[in-house]
Length: 297
Image (cartoon, rainbow, N blue to C red; front, side, top):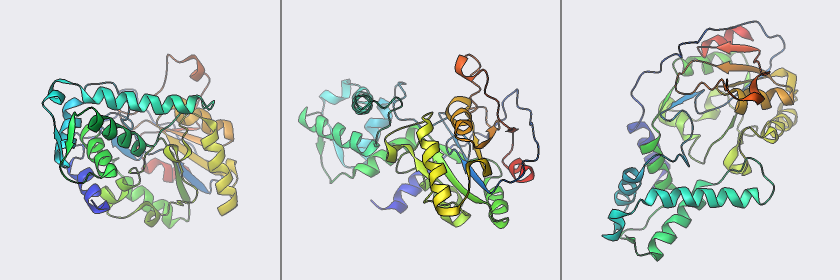
């Protein structure tokens, strides 16, 4: 299947419930001088996610979605598979791949979902739980399943905010817990890739590519190094925007970035009030609309 098919799946299964503000959402704005670049989290910040984040190993029952994905892509389920939760096997494969990274002393392990799906299909064939009728495409299976269990949509005002920042010459990029299909959200909802809107893809940091996820500060150090290399931009000249105090704001501040907590989506906002590690974390800004970024830099 082509990339166009993947984009079509993401769009057709988009979230339809309107993005709603959290009850405690109150903007806290100020002018930040000297900002030359803005770096974004993706899920829960630029795009609203049906599960508030990228789904992957969520332990809710997604067996029906997994089986529908298999059958829609030329894979026939055996009679034995009907009574087995195949999503348990997907979750187990994800955990195995994470454990391999932990064995390499990675505290916040990340996986490449394509390797997980390849392992899953192999095990289901060996167990005679599925029969491959047509040639399966691992990447299509991953996109198809993710679009079923985690519908997404752009945050209100996204395109206008990106256009305004680009017109002002602000360099943008992303640090995201992500998979290979994450950049397709731009084409699915904005009809152009991220680079078109001024994102420096050479500076982008994706967890699946690094095999390490947030809140690892290493991802932010990598981004800082890339901004120095490609744009001669220093950490204190970067504003990082994310929806999670622990995964986004804390590690970004530890590298020297200015920060903005995005509190514009009740599904994604993570204040981590009960987490003792987050008690002293306070973002420079708290925004409830993406457009507010433009007025603060």
